[in-house]
Image 1 (tube, each protein chain N blue to C red):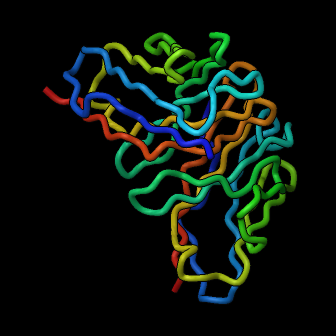
Image 2 (cartoon, rainbow over the protein chains, first blue to last red; image 1 turned 90 degrees about the vertical axis):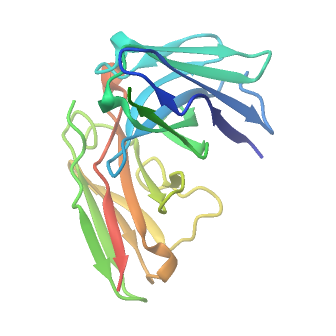
Length: 120
Length: 111
């Protein structure tokens, strides 16, 4: 069945750009039925949706993060990626990727998550 | 767009039932049939429990059920088991601009 795996640096300096990639296995991201999303969770806190992308490249983002977020897709590698610019300590979180069902906006399955710490 | 409101904690004894609420507005929970619930054990990724307010994915026990009244959605866990001790999050569609919002989470303790 579909599995998702996040990868990328675990430490990013303030003001720099956070970059993560999600690799799908056991299924293709080139499905017209799904979007592919990023969600984050600061330590000890709740979940926050960051944004989602369709394999066609269509995106939508959380308005509160939109100015700093770019999500892209690479269908040849069955991957999609997140870039978050001008990070601060407030961006320290576990970042999850997940399949996003756009017809009613739920996420399943999720990747295991990766902790990104923003620190100098 | 504010997060949905959940009680920070809930508890129950094995075999009992517990209900967790998720309060929003007519622009999210009350306006669309697009409420979902997730279970998260410590150090693990969230797992989908309920979608479209009341629907259960295959593999989720029927001890978990969802409902909604007005702007408040609820998750009921019946026949509590020790393995149900986890954090629970609700989520809702919030319109074409905000799209997806989550609740702050509820920590369920099985006494």
